[in-house]
Image 1 (cartoon, one colour):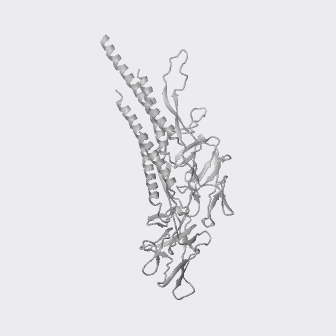
Image 2 (cartoon, helix red, strand yellow; image 1 turned 135 degrees about the horizontal axis):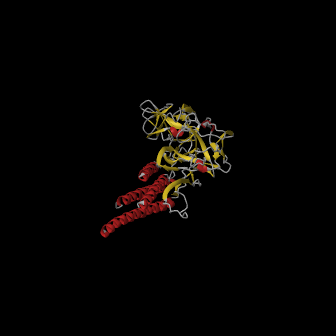
Image 3 (cartoon, helix red, strand yellow; image 1 turned 135 degrees about the vertical axis):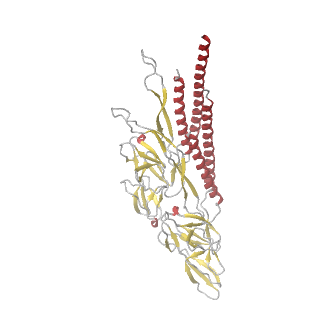
Length: 245
Length: 262
């Protein structure tokens, strides 16, 4: 009898989660290398709506997956020599205490020993998985589109760019990094180009997020209406049935 | 509701952003000032359904999971150390550094600080000092009968004295360089301090390998670009508004939930 209420609540729970994701997208509007996410929904259980002969099963709404849009963010010129943006499919690999992480955030700097590190002080790896060391005495660092770094005429290393056959295998780990949650091995990125002196902005589209937020908020309200109507229905039936007796 | 707190982190981040931008704009005409940039990172993610978990006995796995992020945090305020343009002042005690390096300043506490602001003066004892009267290291004393002072690109300070034909050398200015300039800590008063992140300073004469040269009669203007700061300010303001919109929407949703007639 109360199925409509439970279906409504399942929908509202998913809408709340969707709202949380939109809030995270908007909060990260200005986060370098951030990739926008959206919640995919599914019906639960996932059988067809009509089964011949049998009664129609009740369908609930459930959060299915978070879809991540790995599309290119706009490139923002900063002119800082260790700011780097990736154009096309690919990631930087960084070394953490918990294993390698992948990022599109190219705000690099050097640590006191001259290693190329991220904002959190984690070393950026080259194509062979080793660290890159820069000697600031040797002058300006020039980075080619393939990631090769040189100071003057001397080659100092090559920033590794990695790609995955299936990018959805990557899981967000916070601090603008992704963790490889699958057994896929990262491959050298063939289609990626490195741009020195640029940063990749978040690929959040504000208009889209606000529109989705309005949609979520209205859907939430109408589901609340549905729950109200269902409650009203049971109230009335109790009243009427009471009168018949 | 998580969305409320997430949007609050977004508003706090944009507030910091506006503070950094306003600091840059306020210091647009500060000699040797380097613009700063607020850096953001996404916060932790809560995993409701992990990618890669088994979805059946046949070994099928969930291709992507459900992860919800908790918002944004400021990771750093990064100093962008690009060269500022040189402004001609014709003042003999103004020196601009063209390239890498910092002038070394002896603080009253006995510690060393570093600066790019080369608008120097002499004190009552003829010592070369900053605008706050802190001595430049290595100490250089200009004789009281000096008619003119000339500072070469390599930092050699020569004075012409009354009654003498040849100028005499009174000292050589040295510059300090750091492996990681971004790691220096700002002390205010155009001064920076060495930290564990910056590494120890290496000193040398201007013009030697990896060190910039000096330019007498010039000061280094700040590297703040007004247009890009104003653009960044507009972006920050709109982002702030959008986050506040999220808060009011989440609030409305909670109000809707409260109004359901039981």
